[in-house]
Amino acid sequence: MFSVKRFLPRVKKYLRENLGAPFVIGFQVLLLVAAGLLVAGTSALADEVAVYAYYLLVIGVVLQLASFIRNRGEDSEQ
Image (cartoon, rainbow, N blue to C red; front, side, top):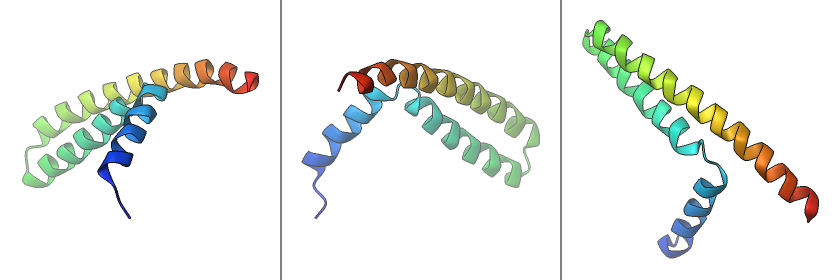
């Protein structure tokens, strides 16, 4: 059974351990927005939104790498 009380703390813990996750999620959202704008015929705006999406992706990947390196040391101690 799905329980919000158990789900939200797990999400918060995941986001604390994976610093880049919000940026990667933001990338995905902006990329979908860019695709919608492209379908709507506003390709100039879609291109601009896609550029910001890729900035978010780069930031997210760098932060995920930092999280991986930080957590790798903690895993070896356990």
